Amino acid sequence: MRKKTSTVLVLGILSASLIITPCYAATTQSKITTEQGKQKENEKQLNDAQGRIKSLESKKNDLEEYLTELNNQLSELGGNLQDIQNQSEERQKELVELEAQLEEAQEKEEKQYSKMKLRIQYMYENSNNSYVKLFLEAKDLSEFLSQAENMSQMTKYDRKMLEEYKKTITEIKEKEKNIKTEQKKLHKLHEESLAKQDEISTVMKSTRVQMEKYETQISTEQDAKRVLMDKITAQSDKIDSLIKQEKKEEATQSEKPSVQNPKPENNPKPESKPEVEDSKPENNTGASQENQNQDTSGEKYLGKFKITAYCNGPCCKGDASGLTASGTVPVHGRTVAMNGIPFGTKLKINGSVYTVEDRGVPYGTVDIYFDRHEDAMEFGKIYADVYQVN
Image (cartoon, rainbow, N blue to C red; front, side, top):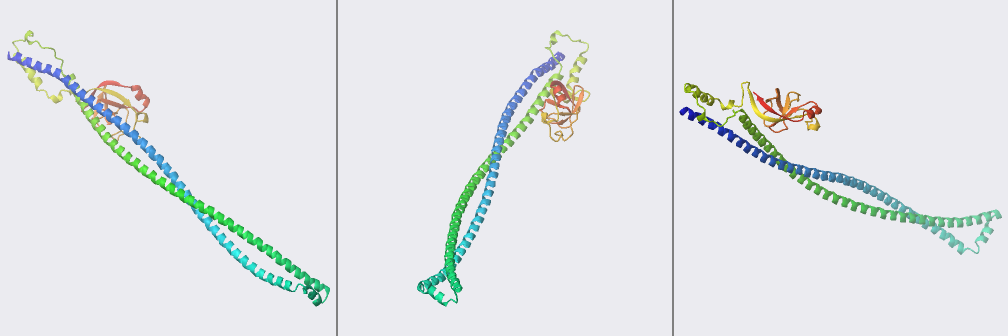
């Protein structure tokens, strides 16, 4: 009677464990689904933040180009102002020279006018006897005509010099007028250039203020991005841990023997061998729990995983350095990628042994490395039992 009660108790415990384990698996799967939902929401927020950062950086780059253009305009204006200043100085020098010429011409005119005035006065006062006196004092007719011609030439010279003086004065005054007009234009250009320079400086200042705002916004978004990335990484680790737990539960379930409803009262036991029947439960209960999922070959069953393939090219988002996450050179037939398990762990899949050297896929998915993208695409996706080789 004790033997029968003991047998029923053991079978009852086994039956209960078969019922409870799927409940645990369902609870674990629910946790995984919840965490994956949170992770997707954070990934969406991360994508939105990256989009905002890209937009802000684009606007900032546009402002930087605009600022460069404004700097060029400011430099050009500075050059123009220098040219205007040089031209204004040259016009001022010309004006000073013209004023000196005018003053010199006026002095010359005054001297000439004084001499001419004396001659005219003399001729006027002696107009009645001047030619008579010349005639009487002349030695001969030739000398008289020569002296009369001289007097006529002096009168013509005076008139000519008077005309040249008037012409010179007119030219000097015209040049002076033109120079002053040009100076006014240069002064106006100088004022306009200064005003334009001030306007560009004001625009540059406001542009820099806007750029600083964009930089602040970019910094804020990058901080938010880092927080989201940390959350996503933590959630990936948690999901990997939950998937690992789920796989262990599945592995434990698959290793347990199938038990049907026991009917000890209809299954008579030989009365002659009670010791043998009692010894079997004792041997089973002495087995180590740690060895339940490990066979005699040293292989630990991890569960049925999804098996995919990848290459190291940009199409599969491979690293530009050509190295794996562990720093090794990937090798076809050896390298696999999976999160949640240490680098260097050996995995046996469909009879082949691989080494975990890369990351990129969650625990429960094994990504097998291929040298060519075409081979990876041809491999596709399968599901297979995965064992950890100790």
